[in-house]
Image 1 (cartoon, one colour):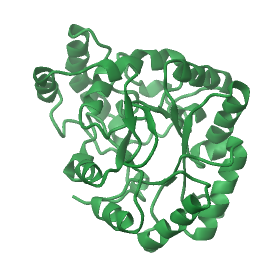
Image 2 (tube, helix red, strand yellow):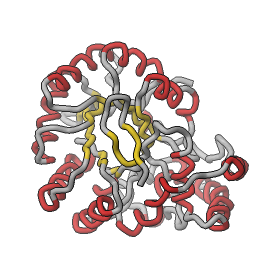
Image 3 (cartoon, helix red, strand yellow):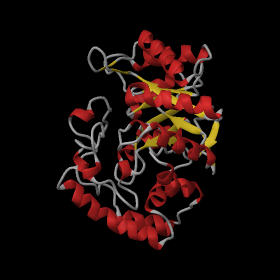
Image 4 (tube, one colour):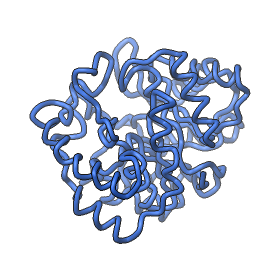
Length: 327
């Protein structure tokens, strides 16, 4: 697998990472044995960067990764996140005390004393980002984290953060059906030497040979109340995706490999993290980093799935709490 750099001063990792939200059931039912096989397949195929968060499955994602590391001694770079407090009520908390305590709790679940990348999962709007980055810099100086990242933020927030201490990565949803980061964030990351980490690069299971079916979605699957997975939007989206599936097959690719190759083509600083539950799903796209789409192919993809083609918003009103909007 081809490699890319995790930020200007960060480690070199392989171009595709592993999104570990799905191993907790957020994108369909699973179990730990299946998840362990999936993580083993990821490492066997060259993936050396795992992305998780303290809120994924109330910590169960980190626990499963910790069990995997203990049992396999796999050499991987780890990113985790904090900032979403669930008790006594759900809120965003970027205070120094909360961040420090959350990191120690993540260490315990992961079975480590250091993570390569530590994200603020959601920004606490009323707390200056400069204060938050100061807290993260202290953790870097203490040798507890390799660098810090931000999730779902605007270009202006990134610039303010960068002025305090260099940011390693920014994570936002980005795929052929969610392209808002093209309105400034991807370019800002490139300008500042920050890695851009697209999550849900396969449109939450829609840009595959066998797109997600609503009848298979059971709680806690976050797609149940997502506008793009509700009728009539779901049927309209499936109709839009069908020609892209045919195009991928005609060009000797799986749908997911073609979609992921398109994301990788958007810049050398992009490191997508598909969320995959099974080794079988992973095998469908693992070769995407070896695909170089031609200018003609990119034009054909743009014709089939032009920017803004998706029916429905990417989040419901309640799911939109936290992500910064800027256009």
